Structure formats: C-alpha cells, structure tokens
Image (tube, rainbow, N blue to C red):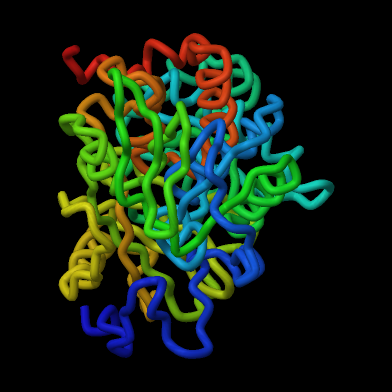
Length: 410
C-alpha cells in the first residue's frame, strides 16, 4: 500500500497546496459580496440562513415566484465553503429511494436551463454496479420513474467490464447504465443560483452569521446578526451541518440530523480510464470513482458521525481507501492518490430530506438533511421549498415524504 501514501499533502479543500485547484473546492471569488454591499435591511419577507446549494437555490426560486425582499445570511467569507463546495460533483439521478430519484430527475433537467446556454452537467452517464439484489431494487425504482425507465440499461458483468476495463477482476453481478447522469460544474451551478437570486432582488450577506432568532406569540419575528436585526415572519434553515444549532436559537429541540464525515481523493495522472467514461458507483461494496482531470477522483464511501463543525481530514483515511480499492477494484491498484479532503453529509434516520414548516413554531422552515444528494437535487429542492413557503404546502409527493413533523411532537 506504499504507493497510496502520496506526498503527505492531504489537506481539506480550503487548505489545498499552493497552485493546486481542488476539483470540489469552494466556489470562486466572483461570488464574494463586495465590501460596499448594501447595509443590512431592517425587514425582509424571508431570511434564508446558509448560502450553500440549499439556501441559494431556495432564494433563487423565491424571487422567481415574486418574493422580492429575500435576505441570505452566510457566516463564511464565500458561499458553498463546506459541503456544497466539497462534493464529488456527480449528478446521480437513480437513488435507492423513488421520491429522491424523482426529485433528482426533475432537478438535473432544470440544470439544463440554469446555465444560460452553458452546460452545467456533462452527460457522461453513470454506471451503478453491485450485487444482484441491490441492482434489482434499483431497477424497480427506475421502472417507477418514467424518465429513468426510458433510458436505463441493465448490463451483465461482462458488459460492465467491457464498458469500464478498470473493473476487470472486480466482484460484481452486473450494472445499470444511466446515460442521463453525469458530472456537474458545481461552481457554475452555485453561481447560477446566486446570480438568479441577485437578479430577482435577493441580497446575500457574507461574514454575517445568524446569532439569534426572536420569537413572540409562537412565531418567528426577527433574525439577529452581529450587524443588526432583521424583522421577518419567515426564516429558512438551510444551514447544512449547523441546522440544529440554528433551530436551537429559536428554542426548538433538535431533529435527528447526523453530520457524517466522508473523504474524497484525487490521484496522480493515470491513463487507464477514458476521460469520457461514466462515473462508477458500487452500491453494494460502497465505493465510487470517476475521471478527474488527468487522474481519478476516488471515494471509499466512509462515514463517521461528526459534530456540527468543519471536519479535518483523518490521517487514516488514505489507508482505508487503499484497503478497500485494493480488495474491490484490482484494476486500480496502480493509481496513486495525491490530494484528499473531508466534508460533511447530513443524514436522517430514513435517509430522506427535511423540507417544510416546523409545526412547533410558525415561520420556521427547514431545508436540511440532504444526505449527500444536495447538489444533484438542488434545483428541485429550491423549487419545492419556495412553493412550500409561498403556497403554504410543499408539493406532493415531496411534502409528506420530507415533512419535519415525522420527527417532531408538537
């Protein structure tokens, strides 16, 4: 496993070695709010906490529905610094849940409109491999989603290895090819949401953390920040791993949201995989890889419960990756990871999102627990969250599936 030790430069996405651009690093400086940003308003129709995919997509959808006084609060100096900027950029539409798959299909289709003529998703396809039972379950979900049923192709093991020779020697029963999936330009996507929100009248304030929520008569009445207080009757909790701390400002007991640390690695140049190859995800063994630059992006699908704070990289993560890939994918034994970082996914007990009004406090709205699917589903999440805020109900079938009250008692 010595070749997996790299050059000792494993950093998180924020502390990348000089001159190296992490493929999933935080978004570019063009999204920074200038020093001459307008003063904090005294009142807003909606205050959104968090400028990651969940928050900016919701803000963009709100202004499209005619809500003009939207304020987004972000504690960090740039949007998407945490999970939104550190993900694997894989737009996977066939998920082990039919409701999430429907939302992912809807969202990726919407991404085609967000780029204003610039493709935000490279449709290289996705190849889900694994054991027969797991593939059968995915096939049933695909059959229930018309857009997926029309495109997916079931492959036997020989066809899988012919498509991706790096899987030679891997233990798998076959795969499912989803041509409409692909790899997303996450920085351009987050920028598209920010641009649409700003064009519609929303204002994003960076380095402006939420420090309190004022409540009166059983409802939200204001959001507190170090720079002032904003009167509002609607507060959206899109704070990612900090969602429960935000709820605590309002005196709400936490929901079962579990931040979970996961690592990604990029390898040195390796020519054994076509640059246009689909991403590969073994849903049984728990690993994925795809082309990234002249090398590969690798993940061992590790998951460790973590406090709601920015995670460091685990020095043992590289060895764990080596052990899994050495055993599971002999065709990748010659690759050498050179860079790695950690990020948090926020999980729920049933692996479904939390999107909707909290029944315990009028005006408190959750957009949280996106479980590693936040980038892929972001456009759809923004749309259904905005509808929930404007219309008073998250549209079916998502309202019941994602309702916060499945975890609360009034």
